[in-house]
Image (cartoon, rainbow, N blue to C red):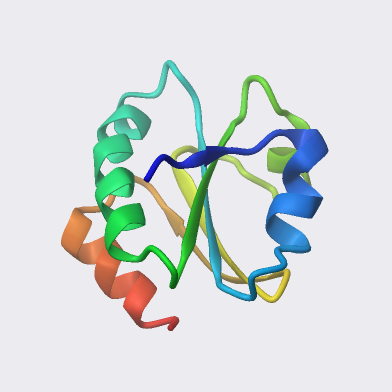
Length: 108
């Protein structure tokens, strides 16, 4: 499963108004960010394991400055878990795959 790239223009429809009623994990990242690159393969694995339970999406903060500004993103990687269009939790920094899975499971 590939992770959907979300833009400023598609953020509301793709994340806030998510029609499939599952939580949405949004990773705010940038190409130049080492920890963000390290998180990439972890998120790919998580997206496969949680398919049907959590939608995983990414926002490139350099190409899409509006969404990060709206959510007060000050450091990356930052992951925000949305449930029913609202922020359920936020995780800042690089996480291990096990830690990320435990965090998600605690919100399901």
